[in-house]
Length: 212
Image (cartoon, rainbow, N blue to C red; front, side, top):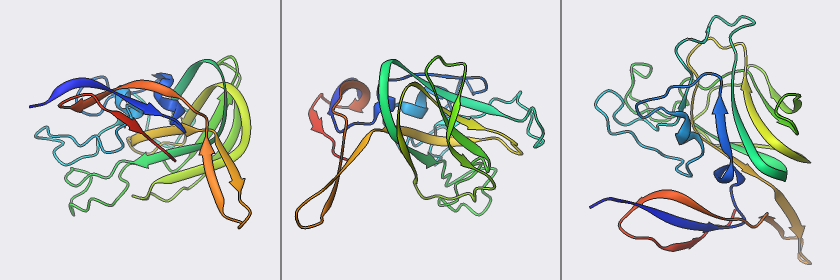
């Protein structure tokens, strides 16, 4: 049997789990919904008939232009209650095993990943500063790790532009990583401690410790 319960994840943590997420263009029903972009599930495997085998998550809204022009853009914004330090964003592309976009049924295709995107930060959610810019980024099934100089902010945004197709992303994670070098030159990555309740699918609630 499957129940909707709560798990507790203890830091170093994915700060995106604690963010309020908005978008100017996103599906609102089916397995591809905005709420799946930061639910802590990097797989989100869909079991619906049409989308069976897809790694569900964010999907660009159908009304957004996809002609590569100036209006062909969209964003996913993560807003926090207070200031956070951030220096890493991790993106999980959509890898669809069965899809009208994937006629070869290759699960490792990074289908519909936007070629042009930025990671942006903002204190007020209106004026944005670019911390990562990627143009003509090749679609990949691999997890994308984007590191940058530590910034203090209240908002983080994944901004897509020059879109020529529907954009799909399984999950976005946000971290503040601290790198420590030991006496033996071993490099250890730690991060901000955060305890947060997340929705989970399980038979019971357990305590889990997550280390990045």
